[in-house]
Image 1: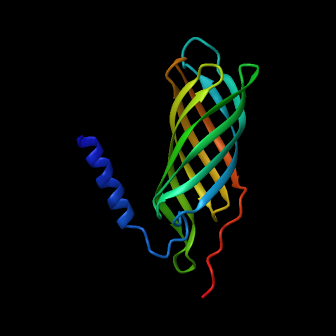
Image 2: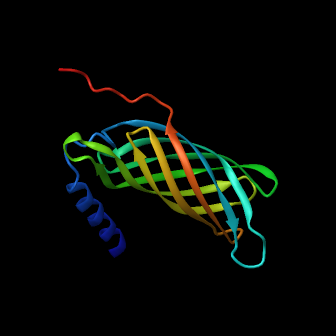
Length: 171
């Protein structure tokens, strides 16, 4: 109970520090990202590290304006000499606005948490730190723990927005 209260308090403090003119994470925004990722799968002990590469689709919607998005990850990846899939929920919390002073916002620094279930018994829980630039391009680095197969997935990603940015109506 204390941890939930602490998390809620932290989110409220982060939300109170955001500027009202911040254009990212607008209310009820839908975002669809396509991300290329690559990295390695390792248990850091006996087995050799395996290459990991693939593409993800990430539809998301803003839940708390200027702070929180939630969505879904659909992943097609290659590792262990096989093409495989994974899917699951995604939550992104905006940590910082990357501002340009008088010119407004250049992007955001986000913490994204996910839990994926894979087609070959993978059970992945992880986090990534992502920089979204100009609300169009995303760069990230992350780690996921496969708690069923007992290994780590370390990866970097490059993504881009594939849906149009909703323009506000002119007065």
